[in-house]
Amino acid sequence: MAEDFKVKRSIEEINKRIEKGQVVVLTAEEFSVLVKEIGPVKAAKEVDVVTTGTFSPMCSSGAFINFGHSIPTIKAYRVWLNDVPAYAGLAAVDIYIGATETKEDDPLNKVFPGQFLYGGGHVIHDLVAGKKLLLRATAYGTHCYPRKSLEMEITIHDLVNAVLCNPRNSYQNYNVAINLSDKILYTYMGILRPNVGNANYATAGCLSPLFKDPYLKTIGIGTRIFLGGTKGYVVWAGTQHKMEVKRSPKGVPIQPAATLMVLGNLKEMKPEWLIGTSHLGYGCSLAVGLGIPIPILNEQVAEWAGLSDEDLLAQVVDYSQDYPNGIKRNYGIVSYAELKSGKINILGKEVSTVPITSFIKSKEVAEILKGWIQRGEMLLTEPVAPLQGAELFPMR
Image 1 (cartoon, helix red, strand yellow):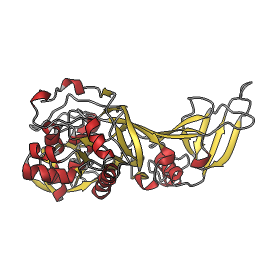
Image 2 (cartoon, rainbow, N blue to C red):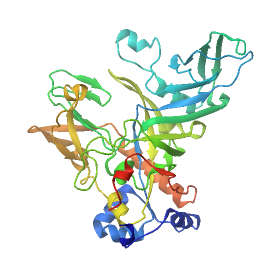
Image 3 (cartoon, rainbow, N blue to C red):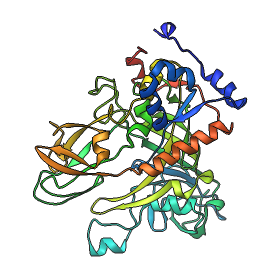
């Protein structure tokens, strides 16, 4: 029970320390080392906030855009940004551009079917970078919206509103992908060589945000976060969110679990934290920089936030059969320490590991977030409601 904790502090108390310049903040990587040295109780007494970070392709991402009324007015029916289709079934000039939408008549796709150079993720990056984009819209015409076509160049500064709204980001763990077949596979997890030629993974290990709060006791609706280089918010549980999954003895999921729906002002974001990507044989995506501060409310939270790469485990999944046809088994459970070593053992074979996530940029996110809090530029928020499933796991 919470009243039995030796260390107890509130988010309000932490915010007062931030405002006075007295807050003690460590990155998740630094805190893992501290907990290993002195234990979670002493670490909880010394540290107020732990910052996390990840930078990885997150396909379920996109942006709501209002491009403003033309004269005469138009009720957009079909819209393209740099020839990438956007969804227009919202209102007259409101659209949504998805990160994985691909450019029509992409030149690479003409030569290699299924290959794309440019998509929604690139559109979002180009907007944030201040580049000019070509907007085209068609309409069927109404009395109040008589215009039937529109074509103009825009930049992000011309837009009435631009809001990054990502339905599923920051997966709490993910599969380690292998290929047991004798043919090369092109996937969203990268190229998988035949006969278990490599093993690809996509999580930042001990820096990964939801690893540091496995039961979502400090992260909820309204949590303020680092998103795309500015401050954003958790607005709901992400799509495919689930909490009742297999967990390690430390309580951390060993398979894909919780996810976040996040939102922030695209006009305040920075292009280095929203990068459009192209994945051979799969399509396009958006690499997103995302970080979450973990308030160290007690030693239980400190114990979770202090979990190291050795404590965090993931399942190995065959993407030639088991992933597309339903995962019926895994081919081992490995730690992130093993994955980061560059080699793991699968079915008696030494296999090279390949991260899809950038550890360097994930660490940079955590460091930037740490600096914001230390300088008093960002206060923590009390969630207005827990995320779905958090109530299933009471604080130990």
